[in-house]
Image (cartoon, rainbow, N blue to C red; front, side):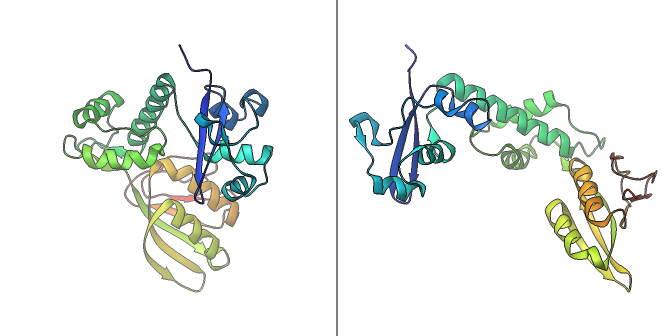
Amino acid sequence: MASKQQVCQLKRNGVTLEVLCKPGTVAKWKEGNLGIDNVILSDDIFKNHTKLERASDQDVETGTGHPRGMAAVEFILQNGEIALTTAERREKVEQRRREILGFINSYYVDPSTNLPHPIPRLETAMESFRYIIDPFRDGSEQALEVVEKMRDVLPIRKNVMEGTLFVPHKYLSQCQGIVKKYCDKGREKYDGKGCTMEIGVIPGNFDRVMAELNKVTHGEHELTFSTATAPKPAAAGSGKGKGAPKRGKK
């Protein structure tokens, strides 16, 4: 018989706190699809629910930073870990698997064709070394680990577009933050007008880079690619062809 409850457990600052929940509801609550009353079986906070041992007020405040009450309960649900049913765990593993394969398909290519490996080929490669997927870890982080193992069974390289970015001095500080967030950066050259820097950007991040550069510079930047034709984002201007400048929206 399926369990009528799940335990959400938080271990923090040396205390253990538990809240009893309806099975399968916490994730929906986190996504904003359920109200808290449809998630918890009660607002009791336990130290050990199997012994019906309630947590002290001091432990609740130590563990959550809130006095006993709904704010503390919500903190536990948001930050605690919940024991998944077999079906829920299988579903989350499959979701992470799709994220991992999608990430690799988007950001890596077959060096012999310069095209992405098809998903079925990536699946076969991944199955060959039996990578254990963690349903609770970020999919992109796990994808980087998978790629390293995949190199032994499949030719693969990161698809990076290399080029130069010119930014006027008045926007340089903010634009350097964008570059640091999304790009690999090489040499920099300064003159009286601004800074020209060598960058490498993954195609999957191209639209984000252009959108954030446009927001900061209002189009007063120039991005020129030397080794690949950049995909044309909605926010980009009319630069065309290999090595053509991609200017921000005026």
